[in-house]
Image (cartoon, rainbow, N blue to C red; front, side, top):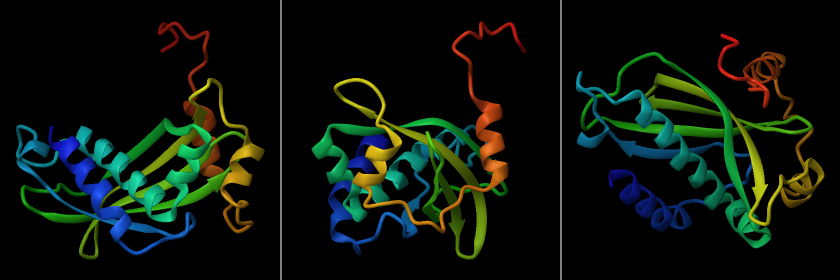
Length: 179
């Protein structure tokens, strides 16, 4: 329920906040709620991932890209992510999530999302995303580039992220016995 309330608040607040380009960094404010806590009374690691969803939505709404996707019947999905935790967020603590598009390869989009409180970094995530069509199938690279108004040439995905992406893909033929 807490996440639904946060989503509703975000849908109301985001259009009222400063307009961004898809290529800007969105800074989305949050506060640790009681329902975010685990048994050790710090924010549960799974909550971080849910909050990342909301922060990505903030960037898409404020940049107008959400409207572009909706008009075309497209929607984003997370295909892979990795997160590193540095410090624990505690009950009532204010924090921001900084969301920026790193770039695109021929199939995937990549984002970086960082949890901060003041000048302190608490966690950082790299997200691999894909866009799907409600009518079925994936949005092709050229279609996405046209919808975004082009991809900036300075947005080159670092080699280590491409290597992580390749290494973390799951083959459709894997059975679970390969580990």
